[in-house]
Length: 234
Image (cartoon, rainbow, N blue to C red):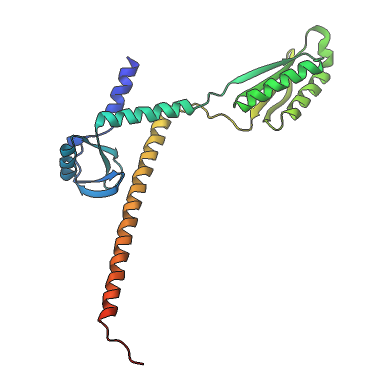
């Protein structure tokens, strides 16, 4: 049911064909961009058997593409899926020590902590004091500080060793933090921004082409003027 609602929301997100009621639009394509009356753009879309899709309604004039609407929705869905796959969910991984952890066990846990941080996860390391081992809390603090120092290349300390009950905690965050999960609203905004950038790029390319054409005309006119002048005498 939720999937059907998402599809419906995506369909209702864009105005197409007769729903576009402005006087003129800027049509962008791989060849560039051009401003034309909306009726003309609709006629072109019908001739091609495609749809006129408004992708940037706030531009002046609004930016549209001529494309099969079903194909367009598929492309948008594919882009959203790719963006979601690139997201990294940040997790907190726990590493547990005893106050008298031996060297082999320490190095084993240090290796795992490095892997966690490289994957973009946070590490919560703690020393658990059982019974009278609480007397060795200074030893546990030294161990955690050593642990933080050995991970300096991979992470940064978010919280220095702190005793809470029978546990002393140390929090380390990755230096190359994983990308936090984005809201659907933020993903939609980024997609719209990308579309606007694409439209602006097409507009700039069109303007650059017009500028080159104008320059070429100017050069031709200058050459003709030069030819019409009498040769200067020595």
